Length: 522
Image (tube, rainbow, N blue to C red; front, side):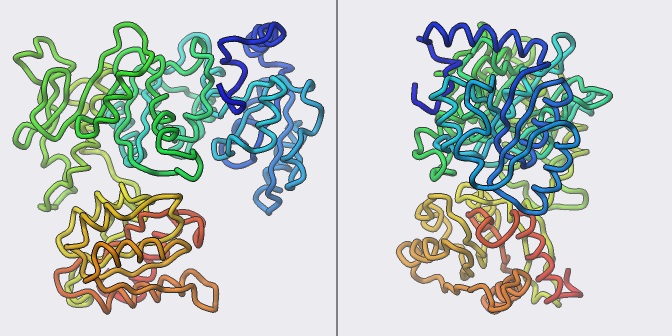
């Protein structure tokens, strides 16, 4: 137990702590009058404060930022009755002494060693994340079960795919959590949902309560993969992995793991689950017992069928995974994504036909291996692909492996990651590399050591300071390197925060720059 962990889960609480646990549980059964401090006024912090105000809690909100967006949100919350304090001076100590608060709700990105959160823990005030708050605010009866999902890569795609499969089964379902819609908002939907497909980041999982008895209890949970990411936040690979593994805590029916990633199976073995919960694997190979997998071109289920020793249920075919009119091979990670989503919804009783119909209805979100300009005379028979969502080396590995000859556009905020394995694996397929961003020197160094034959071009932010001009320069240099039959691939293997608002903004600027250069080829 570290000073950053909430006393609420302390196995050896002080006597007065035990009294406050009982008091908090009583208060959260009715919420009205609960004295709360919300740290952060971003998407999740604003939603948490709004939800708490709606149920009658007393709410104070603090954030170090003072921009126009934060000020507008502050005005809205103040109208609803919250106290809002913006500015760096307000995130060091609480607005009132700690004994004036029953609960702190933190936005997931706040680091555990933030002075305010450390102070709350030392004062014995429980600290929850937005996910824990949402779980505790569920209605006592008729609450929608959660199908929870995490992983280094593929989370959003799989959770949205699972939601599509649930809807194909005729269920009122949506995706929520890290995918974009805060969980407390999904809970307050006027028509309600029968199932929630929940994406959880490592940050959100870190802030789950250690009060296991009352914390999140998913119907089924999955970890897609675990690879180095956000190590600057978690401090070590071990801490990052442990955070991912918390998703299996209290799982009722199925703990879904990736057979190709032994770490995910180890996390299942170590998990404290509800008695009777099963370990369910997914694999691109022929599935064993209690697995979903691939037999020739058929995705099948040997986990949620009767007499599974001798039988398997056909879910869909590889042809169902291809975009309409496409004859290109299905990327391996796409097969894994479908199998993981299918495992989650099959645990919820979704029939085979709904899995297939959900796959057919699913449309990937932007910036995920999306062709922005197809090979043509205008593009010099070069394909231009936006995978700006590849914000770490593990994600970039998947998209680089999809194409035979690549001009790689990479760089940004490395988040403590290493590029050695990525370059060693894919250097032979690289025609060249165009690098941008704060940590591009790390990528350049990996290329110099492991693929010295690959031409490398580094692009600085132009004097104009405009990212559109930056992307125009990146696209121009990539076009100079590319030859007919190549793919120019934006798969940065880094976060975008150093130069762009988000990975979506980065991808949009790339697509716009490609369109400006090849107006007839896009």
